[in-house]
Image 1 (tube, rainbow, N blue to C red):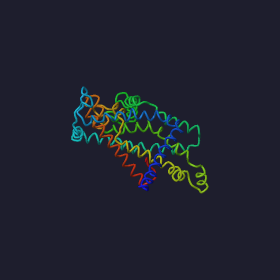
Image 2 (cartoon, rainbow, N blue to C red; image 1 turned 60 degrees about the vertical axis):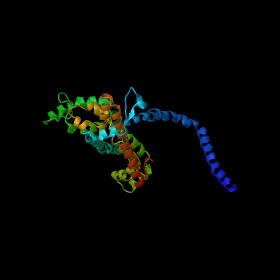
Image 3 (cartoon, one colour; image 1 turned 180 degrees about the horizontal axis):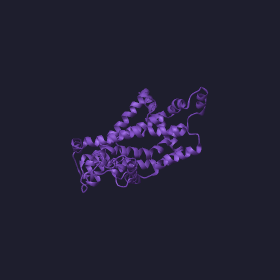
Image 4 (tube, rainbow, N blue to C red; image 1 turned 90 degrees about the vertical axis):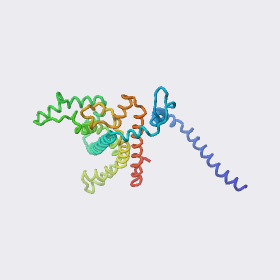
Length: 319
């Protein structure tokens, strides 16, 4: 009995001491916890708090009865969405736009960062950075207005230039075949320059002595970029690729909604615009919540899956 008590006491004391040590460290570094408190409470209140309402996806929500008073119906809304005739169209449009944007938009900031990093003329480099960064500060509404103005069949500047060159201008705003290209390329123009900032920050950590040694060994500029610069930013590329794949179904609806019209609806209707239309325009709150929850769950599964794959094949992962 005595030996048992000794063992028990020996097991509990370190745990208590450990808790005291944690609290002691927190008190010693209280400034850091005060500093992080606004961000912590922001996510707690505005991101985790609203998750309470997710339960209406499994209920027949009636506003007059409230969330708790509405009856449970299980997975009926999910079955209704999966069995609908528009399910595969929405899924295909969402995936095709996301994959198109990933294939075109993801490598361009990397290439642009590598190119800007090689510019030695400081004045020209600052000018190039300003020109490429500037579109990022244009709001989505203004961007959509510019696209509509430039591509208008009657008064669009780009349409007139194409016709002046002797070609027939395509109906880019109304033809479903052109919608994805218009959406992706305009997004790349707006965000590519801003996306280079992360890669330029990573390239600033390259040791200049490596380039000096490579130059002495006779390496060309392309070889130095390939064997020194690119390996340096590979961890950053990996992390951003994981995050992009994790949000594969999260196509922002604002720009799509602004460029959407009845003629290009065949290619422009995605899950996010469908949730907006069902939830806010048609007041089908439970159904739209179920569709949004499905979208979020798939994104979470993709994020966890790709992170585990990267974790097993390399040392670069989110966790």
